[in-house]
Image (cartoon, rainbow over the protein chains, first blue to last red):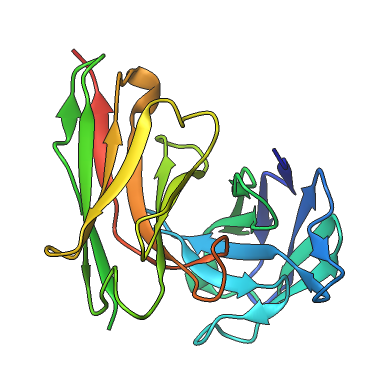
Length: 113
Length: 123
């Protein structure tokens, strides 16, 4: 199974500041045949289901604010919130869909400093 | 607008069989849209675990660690798909989500989620 490791476990960021979350996969999730990274990011607010933010490592889902961006390739990925808003308080998860079983990272909790 | 709603018994006893249903509205689970559907669970205070998926044609795919205890099936006439979980233990206590696999691939991100249903395993 591909193990997804996120860091840090939690972070506190001031409103308007940048938040950076890292995700590392135990195996490459990049397909050379289509030049895509099979990596997604989700946001989960308390008491709610996860919401898809980013897929193909850097493509924003429709309706997701542009302060959310994804980057990286191969085994190392980053989710960046460029200017943290109060409504961004949540747990963020990465997920690989390169191969079965589909696996998630352990989550990163983002709070306001 | 596509919506999913998971439902279940809430409480089951250890060693019993759990059956959950996901009701889909706004799309046909077995129609020409060629969608895949999934079950994902989240133990209290923990992360997410993909359990398995079912295709528009009824093909199923499971995570290996649960494959011996899990069956996903559907009822097109009700536009529902189901999760059957045998021999449950306290470790199966979790919120169970149903979700749509983002169209285009059998294995993909999950773009539409139901609210989830809490299942507690306790005697």
